[in-house]
Length: 607
Ligand code: ME8
Image (cartoon, rainbow, N blue to C red; front, side, top):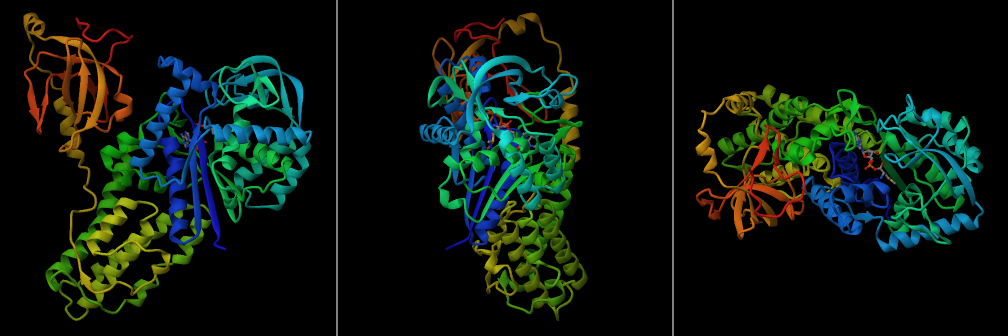
């Protein structure tokens, strides 16, 4: 039987679209999944959404939804669109409002109850709705939740308790014996110390909630959302994947749930435990966690549109040693794009292919591999870094080799060194083939672009050895990464700041501005930045072509109220008539649509 590799991300709350934070965990999981697939290991990558939280209800109501399920469906579509754009190759996208999940979660609750590990009691204390967690005094900082900076609510309620205390010693044994159960090492110690301070029984249901999964034997209570959410790791996958390697990738904010409560539930139901819970650090802005609730979130899509998906993936993995915290910096992203992706990798490809074009009429000629250069690539080491969940170092190691190949070309000077030219160019081309293969898990689009130019197809890690590139013809194409020029950005900013000339009041009055409602949105077939909208402006439904692609998903736009300049002369925008202009605000990062502050009927005048 084939070896299995099961990798999971947290299932995210649906109160907002993905942030850099959720993109981070998901991209790393994607890298690990893709890596194992290339090793021909039977891999399953699970991600999804945690929909049964009270936060879902709150967010839906804030957005004027009356049907909560409809809200979660709309959000699920957005999350999936974002993951698609970021090339996330998940095998299943679990949603906890799925009836199958609900039923299995109830079965588990029953199982634990029958083991006599669940009993009815009264909880009196604090609850943070942001964390969906019962808090103790020592969990708080100055009375506030350290993650959400909010005061937890006081509650006194009857609910069901899970006998977590019963598992204290078993957990200590497990974690002490199994060095890989919690990674990185520092977090393992943190958890061990926490358990040793004493585990209390845990409330696992909540009364009087309007949204969630019913406790199977008591309809007045709902499952505590974490009990339900953790079970996604069972309900979202066929149990044959709970075999060789089961890795939960989580942020350090939720490690306790995964390193204490989850294994305790599994011990109670006598099921296999995960191999590793890896808790990574936070991306911060000025030292503060980037998060939806703190309102400092940066959209991964905006960054991908501005710099490319691969530049974003590369930056997130390479910038901060996986496991540690680090500040997010757009400047650092730009530097990595310019210096590493464009210079080191992009130039290596284009200079090699230019030489092949010039001296060998675009032909790949088989030559002798340079053994010194060959020895600079250590596949085993890279693979073992990935197996130890150190994608940052693995990527750095690949990069060291890219730099070596550049140096090799510089030293050998194949443009003037006729004697060795064939061997040098073959060595460089074959190195590029292996580099593309190794980079596929990290930056799949770029890897495919390299393959296309080398005229080869992606294979697997059996081919991560030298000398396999066959004779053939190269297919030199566009450069891999365009550099972001500082100059351009500055000029753009200066133009923005320049004030336009004064206009007369009467001139302004000539403009007809109305509230419109977007009926539908689709992509413009011939333009990168344009969307085609059908907008109800009260008088009729008109077509408006707007340059907002990438800043909103099509789903987000549908039904949105906007502000439209309606008496602008119609214009043809790349083959599509635009009968008006949508008003939006923009800086050099993003475009945001202006919308009425409250709902108002389409056609209402803007004064
Ligand atoms: O906690 N830096 O969902 P959530 C790095 N539904 N990672 C970050 C981050 C940041 N600034 N912000 C978020 C939940 N993350 C529960 C999980 S699992 C059974 C239930 C990532 O939407 C990180 O992985 O609050 C963190 O643990 C997760 O998003 C929290 O996502």
